Image (cartoon, rainbow, N blue to C red; front, side):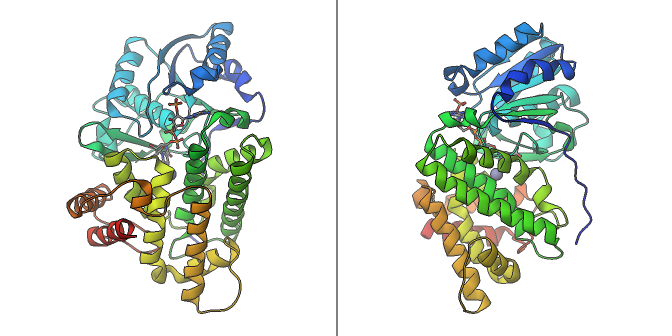
Length: 394
Ligand code: NZQ
Ligand code: ZN
């Protein structure tokens, strides 16, 4: 077992009507001037934004607005937000949306409180010294950004998608009403379930020490997400299933399912970020398209974890060698992805890169990782290229 630090400062208000508490929580945070940050229209159409505006007006909290965050949120809007927040002397950012809006808010928060060019943090040439406080009304269960230290931003020129992790940006509060996710298209629900699973799988497939309690929590989380993803496929308005998935999204990426592991593998995420940056695919779908190829490339180096996963998560039973059992577990997970409409190859994702493009992605992925990535198996550029090729050829 590895030593660990577990830090989850986010106050969670969960359940029906959670968003009604937004005014009270902003007051609790002593917010004076809020930047209301949101996406492309879903929160306006559902009436949620009107409700949030009314709550702020009702509690006498001044605010300015910046909408228009897109999936794979762009640096250009972050710069705009930084200028606006400085000009308006904003002291709190309130998000209404999913992972992309929260990540954009975190970047704006760093830009205002740390100064300089915010992209430096995402290029890892500088470390942030501050971040404006952030609160979120969550509308999508997926990225876990409502409790995580992560933020992922795409630079408009060249489609460079990069992550920056820093505890400074962990949200002060998250208001989570599962009902708010019922307007999601089925595809986004499935992408979200995939991302939630992957955040725990990235922490599960590690070599070296592990912790039994963490493994049990992780396995239960993964089984719960798969079970409820199937329920939501048939009954998108099932509140309890929405609630299970929403809470799983936060717990899967707030650090809980990695305690005692050696920090996680996260290669599938790194490989996906290049797809998201260059082809603007939905994050969850990109992960599903890459995972099977990654798993087949690395499983022999992390066999005991893949066997455990096959038995305890995917319910693989019967005999066979460890390798056979591990492969059955991988196949079962890919069957699950297909069963919820997720791709398991680049073709199914709708992306057909040339060999040159595959090489470019491998080079960019390796550069982003500082040359090497992974724990189940440490990958270098050449390994990344092989995995991209596997995903392209399937
Ligand atoms: O812009 P609107 O109109 O709101 O539409 C959004 C968007 O098109 C829509 N949506 C959100 N809530 C909705 C809704 N549509 C109907 N009803 C609702 N209630 O969903 C679409 C996708 O939204 P987005 O925020 O992009 O999705 P998600 O939460 O999956 O976030 C994905 C981003 O998070 C990053 C990903 O890389 C990607 O850029 N990640 C962030 C992490 C973190 N900060 O810790 C970790 C993750 O691994 C991930 O990398
Ligand atoms: Zn993710």
